[in-house]
Structure formats: structure tokens, C-alpha cells
Image 1 (cartoon, rainbow, N blue to C red):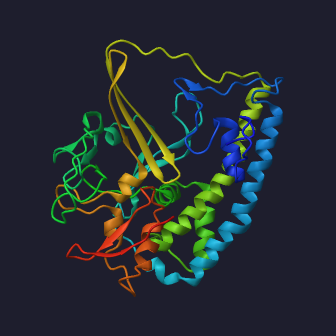
Image 2: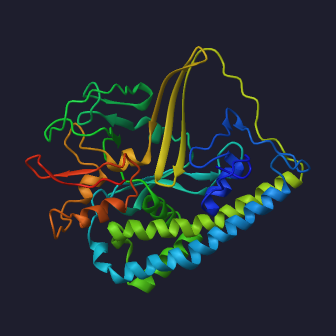
Image 3: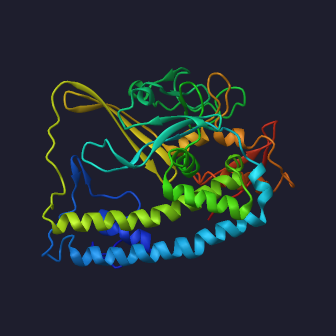
Length: 374
């Protein structure tokens, strides 16, 4: 779906076209290989990534930045001011996780944005995650399938994870979801833009502090108000505002590196014999994403992905503790039971990425209403 690949249908947005130039298509880019990317770089060859293409990308990024900062973000502030009561609704889980993002060197020891773990919404006791080799973070991941439609009932570390479907119909006191229940040190955590904004505010990031402090002054907020439906929406706008600037900064760094002679786009990587465990972390648009792999005899023995929506949409675990979605709905007002728009408003504030078929039921298990998107 890109003009670069010769397809007749052009991407619909500047963002999609930017990604297509680098990755071939959007979403689910196709150019990743072990050791780098498959996008060849040749500053003199028009068939590859070159200065002309980079300049075009910059114009697209400027267009996206201007829309985000001049239209989208001001609209978010205006909506937040008009519906301030939603800063008091939808709190739920106030444990947060964000991982370090934007590595500044090849060894991933310095990052542009900080990572950290916040417990009970207390920014004063934050535990910062230094890098992706953080032993506490890696050791304390587990996923419960006690309430999910998979074989077994125990909690397993992703390296030992099993994903064997076993559908048994909805049961409020047993299994009722296709989502596993990820837990960090036994606790549910919320991931996403709000987590990243709060962690980096605590870390003293200058740009994030300016965005948050200016919004707080304009709207009459404190940091405690961000633990809410509207807080998540506002934080997403702040993250987009920040990313719009960062995208241009990193593109300029890429261009400078290429001009200086660094045109390597992939490093040859040998997979050794033996058995190895590995994990990669990343702050995806919806929050912390991790991929866990076990390699044995140069083949994949086990592969588990703990994705942002799984954290937020997780059902109750083996201890009966609810995940962020469920917890955020406790006390959520509903004016009409057959049109639970207020429930959708809170769930949408997490930006769910799940199958587009959501059913609502009453406590007895009877369907209330069904919405089909054609």
C-alpha cells in the first residue's frame, strides 16, 4: 500500500506513508530481519532509501506534527475542560509500567525516555528501569490463565508460557476471556501513554514536565487527576505531541549518519548452537510490549508475546484480582443500561486492540445489546 512499492493505491495518511517508505506497508511492516532491516540505503540510487526519500519523509512528518500540535492536542485540552468530571471516573489500577525507549547507543545503555514501575500511583516511590536487562523486571513477569480459555490454571513466566486454547464458554466464576492475565510481582499494572507520561514526569523529563505543568495550570489539575478516564485521553495527546517532535529529531539524526558515511542497515547475526533465552521490550503506541523467546538447537522452542492490550484487558487472575479494564469500570456511571456509552468511554480511553466484537451482558449472563460494525 505504498508508492515506494509501486502499488497504485497510496496510503491514506501522512503517518501511513512515512511507515510505508521505511517498512513497505502499514501496519505490520515487512522489512525487519535479524540484525537490522532489509531497507537498502544508497544515497545515489533512486530505487533505494536516499536523500530524496528522506526529504519527502520529513515533509510528511512536519505535516503530521502540525496536525497533532495545532489541531489534535488543542482539541484534547478543550474536551478535557468541557468534561472535567471524567477526571474523577475510571481510575482502577494505579500500578504503572513503562520501559526505557529510544536507545541512544548501540548497547542500549542510554535512552531518550525513561522506564519505571509506579505502585499505587505514588510517583515518589517509583522504581526506575535502567535498561532492558533489568533483572527485577525480567524475573517478575508472569501470566495467569486461571480465567482465560487456555489449558491449565497456573501462572507461568513467559519463557515457560503455554498458549493452548481450550474454550469452555463464558463462566463468571471460572474462565471468561481469551486474554491471559499478565502480572508484575503478582500485581496487575496499567501500561500505555499515561504510564509513560507519569514515569517520565517523575524522571524529570523537561518536555513532558512542561506539557503536564502547562495543562495542569490551564485545567486546574493535579497529577492525581490523571488516574482516570480523561487522564488517559489527555496523556495520549501529550505523548502524540512529544512523538511528533521526536520523529523529526530522529530522522535528522538518521540523515546525518548517512551523510557521514554510516550506511549499514543490517548487521550479520549468527544464531549459535545450544539453548538460549531472550526478551525484547518496547514502548508500542498502546504501552509496554515484550517478546520472549527460547531458542534450542538454532530453532525456536517457545515464543510468547506479552502485549499492551493483554496487560490492560487482562481478566481476573488466580487470586481474583481484576485487571485495569475491569477495575476502571467499578463506580463508572451508566445512564442507560441498553446503551452503555459511559462504559465504552472508559474502555476506549485505553485504546483497545482486540477483536472488533464486544458483547455486554447483565450479571445473570444475558446479553444486553450487541453492536456490529459492518
